[in-house]
Length: 458
Ligand code: ADP
Ligand code: ASP
Ligand code: MG
Image (cartoon, rainbow, N blue to C red):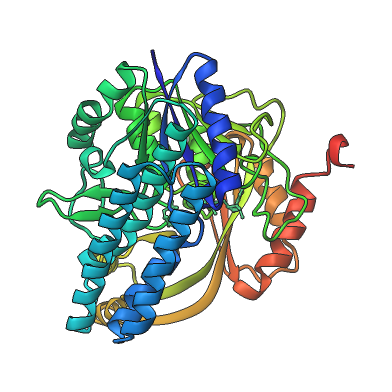
C-alpha cells in the first residue's frame, strides 16, 4: 500500500479539540485505502516557549526556567488526559524522559551562561519529540494502529545547527529503514517534523517552519502518493492573508510557482518543501485542518491553470538593500565575483540582484553578518545600506511567455516608491523592492488590480 504523508502544523495540534480533528482526518485517509505517515509540529507556541526558556537559562533565571519547563510538561499531560491517552504508561515515561533531558540542557546553558547552536537545537527539538509522542498515543487511544518513530532516526542532516541541511542519500536510506516497515505493516508512523540528526549523532533542526520540509523529505524517500500540508488556512492564497483579508485560494499551482512563492515569503510552505517532491514527482496538497473537505491547493508539475494570468503574490519584510558602487567607475572583470565572495564568506544568501554599469544592488534577508559583509565590500567599492525594506513578488508561470503581464504589474504600481525591480531567468516571478512602510498598501492595491473579485466572493 502506498503511503500518504500528512503534516500537521502547530495550530492543527494546538489543543485536544484540534488533535481530535487531526485523528478524524488521518482515519478518513485510512478508510480511503492509503497508509498515512503523520509528521507533526510542536503544539502551537511551544517552539517559541522553548527558545524563550533557553534565553532565560542563559540569563540565569533558574526559577523562571523551572516553572516554564513544568508548564510545558503540564500542557502535554493535560492534553493527553483530554484525549484519553493519560493512562498510557509508555507515554508518561516518554514525556518525563524528554522533560528531564530538556531540563538538563537548560541547566548546562545556565551554568555556561551561553547557548551554543547545538544546545538551542536540543532545546527546540523537544517540542516535536513531545508532540509526536502525544499524537501517537492519542491515535492509539482511539484504536488506530500508530507507531512512534524517532524523526532523528529518519532525517539525517549536516551539522549546521539551527538551519541544518538534509543529507539526501542518507535520509532516503534511513527513512526507508525506519518508516518503510511500519508502512508495509499497515501501521500509521508518527514522527516529529523539523528535527534531524547530525553525523556525530547530535540533534539538529531544519530551521523555523521546517516541519513542511521534513514531510516532503519523508514523502520523497517513501515515494508517497501525496504529501499533504495541513495548516490553518484554506490553501495557498492569492496574497498573504495577514495583509489582504479577501485573498482567495489558488486551486492549482505548478511546482515552480509554489517554490517561488515559498521562497519569496508565503509562510504556509517552508522554502525548501517543494524540491524533494519535484525529485519524485509527488503531488503536494495544502489543506485546512479545520475544513478537511475543502479542495485546498494541489501542487503538481503541470497543473490545469485555465486562463489565470498570475498565480499569487508573496512578500517578505525586514529586508536590507545594499548598493555597491565600483570605486573604479567600471564594472571591471572580476568585480561581481568579489562582490558575491563577500556574501559567500559570510554565509549570507542574496535574494534579489540588479546591476548597472557601475553598481550592483542586492537584497539580503538575514542581516546578522551585515557589518562583516560591508567591511569586505568596502575594500572594492562604495557601499550604502538601507534597512526596513520589503520584497513584493508576483508569481505566475505565464510571466515567462506573456511579456504584457510584467507591464501590467509595473503599470499598476504607479505612485509607489519602487526601489528595485527584478525578473529572474526563470521569468516566473516579477519582484519589486520597496520601503517596508509601503508594503501593505502596495500589496493590497496590486492584489485588487491583478486578482479581480470572483463570483463566489462578490
Ligand atoms: P503551520 O503552523 O501550519 O506550519 P504557518 O503559520 O507556518 O502554519 O503557515 C500558515 C500561515 O501562512 C497562514 O496562517 C498565513 O498567515 C501565512 N501565509 C502567508 N502567505 C500566505 C499565502 N499566500 N497563502 C496562505 N497562507 C499564507
Ligand atoms: N515547530 C517549528 C517552528 O515553530 C517547526 C514547524 O512548526 O514547522 O518553527
Ligand atoms: Mg509552518
